[in-house]
Image (cartoon, rainbow, N blue to C red; front, side):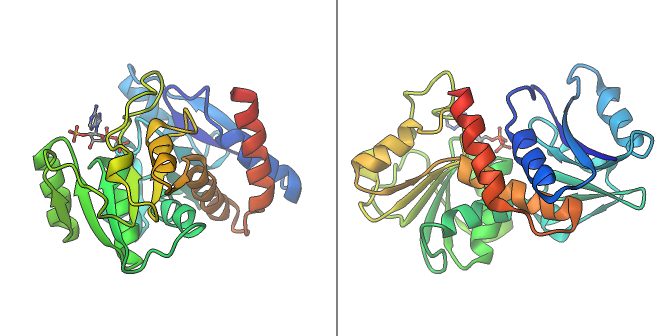
Length: 272
Ligand code: ATR
């Protein structure tokens, strides 16, 4: 039996095992998907985990916070998207070589595509960290006009420069000019759930607003979007699509996404 799993810290609340194990069971695969708690205080823990993948019969693993950048130095190869985005959320052990992929980028685009076209749309991305990079890359690939809005100007400028997109100065809160808004910052996540970077008056009634936060599911930004009459997309849609893409990389099989979706919502019900 091959072992798969997710590394991160803290990892206990991850919804990835419930999705991947449901899909493994559904397809009758001889595999299991576990939580791997990597100690952030011990710099050798991540290195040892990577060096011992063969020993532990690990076929691949998902990577979450805070290891999406640090993991890159242990990869033998990268997928071009992971290289451009500059972070890895999926590692596949291919013949004892660790290959790094990034499924966040396309996962975000797929989540948006459930509700809207992306091509030629004016997109505002809140934040300029790793999540913003992945999403800016994929939405630009799909032909959107992407703008970055970030607290620290230097980071916004750097990202805008690198991806040849625009940034909006942080003091100029954008008002109703965007077709799609994506929050990639932690603003509005537990425990500060009443916070939001934008409010209803900043959002067009025909806009689509996506938050990548998954706790809570309905963030204040999404409540503001609803107030404006816009379409909200909560973070679990991206979580689902990036996991389905991971499953395909791990097992070289189409993911049973409906099975994964059902398991995800059951897990969320249990959590809430
Ligand atoms: P990730 O890599 O997961 O996207 P990150 O690198 O920590 O996470 O990036 C988080 C983003 O959220 C950053 O752009 C950060 O802004 P700064 O560049 O100014 O640090 C943004 N962010 C975090 N907390 C914020 C807050 N309270 N208000 C506004 N932006 C915030």
